[in-house]
Every structure is written in structure tokens, then in C-alpha cells.
Image 1 (cartoon, helix red, strand yellow):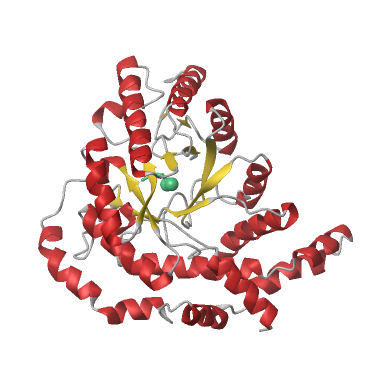
Image 2 (cartoon, rainbow, N blue to C red):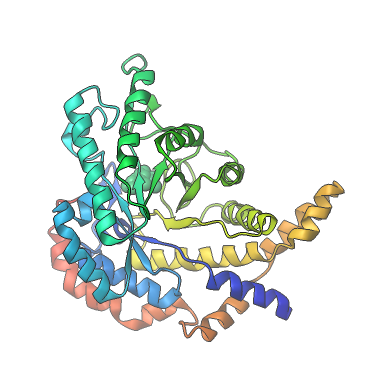
Length: 396
Ligand code: RM4
Ligand code: MN
Ligand code: MN
């Protein structure tokens, strides 16, 4: 590989950060049940500790996203402990995720619930989440809503939209200067007839309506099959409305598998459009790259390392596309040349250059192998096995 290409990979990796989800270290399951892993994290301390391992080995994950209900059971009152923990472990708190879907009163929705008392409760939780983010000094409060309906005619879709507009506006008004509200969309599940925020257009309208600090969050698993996600990314970038990503892969629906396990070219194409936008505009797209995976069969920490390493590879490959050559091939409608500029970059084996980058940054040459050699897994397995065998009541 030429020195110029290796330099590009080094620069790309130096600038690439991806946030870990606390729930990705915990025992989660499918709607059919949970398989408990002896080494899974239960306490927030354990989640931070596992995240620190991933960061130490990959150099790319300095922040951990938290779910309010699972990680801050006392709400704002949990923040001093969380701040102290983050400080001690050396991993900063990332996005704050309110939980507006798990408790019994959300059976018929949160912001879209016909019962004003439930809407009020949901608002209070959202306000508290904003306050938690403010106290912890983090930027993003990330909203995903399970709201929707299961049978035609059972919900007033327009009225629910109005309730969403009102509530999101009220939450936005609580944001501090350095905070953002991210609005995530998902076509179905748990609702199987209509979902209140089902696609990027709905999320965009709601985010725009909420106020200037709201952006759209793209979860790669939240699209109909074969949808062109990179085009959505481009359109949101052009609107200045793309806030960030929840990366995961899937074969069928919201499968939450490790990144690129099913379709690595899809992730490459997303990264490539972002790099192309940056090349064209001359400015960095300010995006929160986050992982939202919770596969329940692979070892939690290994699955996370595998995802981060693969994301680094795909991002490095995307950095190799010669954007100016591509722009001229497009203008000349030289289709084969244009397409092969992408294919060649995708086919490049970037692993040797990444190994050099790791050595230069004093990181493990092979993060998975280093993790297996470290003894960490054996240690936490013996510490946590008994508790995990007994099960735990929280979802994550
Ligand atoms: C949803 C969505 C949210 C995540 C929850 C647990 O499908 O992806 O981002 O917080 O799952
Ligand atoms: Mn998500
Ligand atoms: Mn999801």
C-alpha cells in the first residue's frame, strides 16, 4: 500500500470514534426469552468496566451510552454516582436514552397515549432525562418511541402526531445550550399496524418542528429490507439534520447483530457518502456514531470488540475512495469506472495498515486475541456467574 493511502487510513482512524451501548454488555434476549451469559454485566460499574476494556483494546470508544431506567434507577439522583464512576473508569458518559416503552402505563403509548395523565408522565421522564444529560455534561438525549397501534382504526394517527409535536417541543424547550435531542424512527415493532415515528421523513418533520437543537437518528436496523439507507443519510446531511447513528446489522428486521456481519458493503456505502459529503463541503460532519447491538449468543465483550474492529476497517476502506476521480467519472457518466472506484476501495485489504496504526498508537495488534489472552473474561466470569445464574429482573 502506498504511503499516501496508509496516511489516509491513519488520519481516518485517528478521527473515528464510536460509542458503546451499556445495554450491549447486559443479558438481553428475544421476545421468547433470555439466555443468561455468566460474564454479562448487571451493574453499571460492570458495564463501565467492560466498556473500558473495549476502549483500551480498540482506542475508538471513549464514551458509553446509558439507558435511564436500566442504568440510573434513581434518575437525577443517580447522576453524582454515575459521574464519579465515569471519572474513575476513564470512560465518559455518552447519549442519555430515556425509556418510554417498558413500564405498564405505556401499554398504549407514551407521547401518543390517549390518556393525558400518561402523556404527562412520559413528558416528566423526558424532562428528567434532559436534566440527567445536563448534569452529566453530555450532548445527546436520544429518543426512541415504541408508540403505535396494532389494528386499523384503533388509533387517531393525526391526533397522535399533534401530541408528539407538542411534547417534543416542550422537551426541546428544556435543552441546555450544549444539548441536542435525537429523534429515532423505526417502521414497526413492537407496534405492527402503525408506528408514530415510522420513517426518516416523519422523524425529520418532528425534529424540525421541535426546534433547532433536534436532529434525526438513523438506526441501520430500522428500515424496510433493501431500502437505500445511504441516500437517506445524504438527504439528512444536506438538510443539516443528521444527528448520528445506531449501528447494527440485520438479515430480517431489527435484529441488532454485530456491524457488517450480514452486509458490510451497506456500512461501507454509508461511510463513503459521509466522507464524500465532507470532501465536497470541506467540513467535518458532526455526527454521533453509536452502536446499538444486543446479540445474545456471542460473548458480549467479544461481540463489541468485533463490531468496533470491523467498523474501523469499513471506515478505513471508505477513506480510500478517490473522491475527485469519482466526481469526474460521474460527470463523464463513466459508470464502470465510477463503480469500480468504490469496489476497489471496498476490496482493499486495510488490515495491515490498521495493524501499523495500532502499533503506532500503542494499541493491541489483534484486539480480540489480546482480549482472550488478558484473563479479564475469566475473572469477570467467576465474579458474576452466580448472580447471572440466579437471573435478574431488569431488562438490561
Ligand atoms: C429499539 C431502538 C432503541 C433502543 C431500544 C432498546 O429498537 O433501537 O434505540 O434503545 O431498542
Ligand atoms: Mn436504536
Ligand atoms: Mn432497534
